[in-house]
Image 1: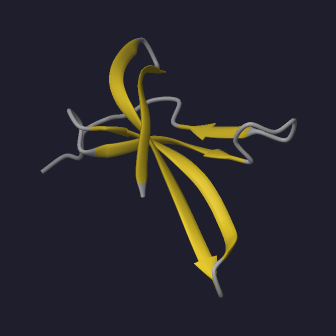
Image 2: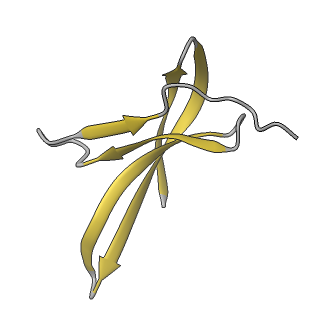
Length: 71
């Protein structure tokens, strides 16, 4: 895992500072799965995942909204 940058991520009407964390899984020294997560240290949660980063196939899957769990 590598933190590649810090950015602002919008979820609903709110914005959060997040770290872009690159995750790479290797098998026999070769990458088999590479993606990035947008992690908010304030919320202690992943706000989005980015697949095929830096390619024409790049896709971001993100939350539309967040709500707290009732106790």
